[in-house]
Image (cartoon, rainbow, N blue to C red):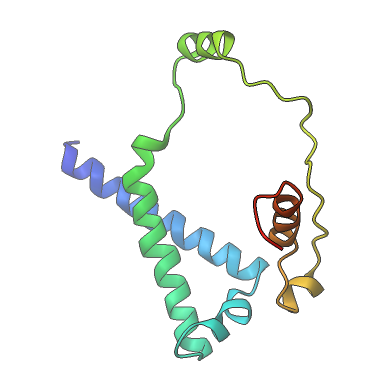
Length: 129
């Protein structure tokens, strides 16, 4: 298999993976109900076409092209020694911000995660009130 065939195969797999991920996302969360009012024109069929186009073509091909550059460390030795000499120190793995997540909050137009981040930044005097 030459390089062109490998790239075509990778892009084809990316398109299929993008379509599957878009379909699963559409089953779990109705993206048109959430985002259609914010795009023009605000019609559900146009929203579905845009949703599947972006999810399948843009994200699928984008991930397929960038996949070779996004992989992590393949060799245990160098990764281990870099982390040994330059450790990442955290006191706990518990989340430090509490953001109550519920469908009612999202449906009402609120974003609890961004509200929690905004409150935390205001407490540390990075954002004005």
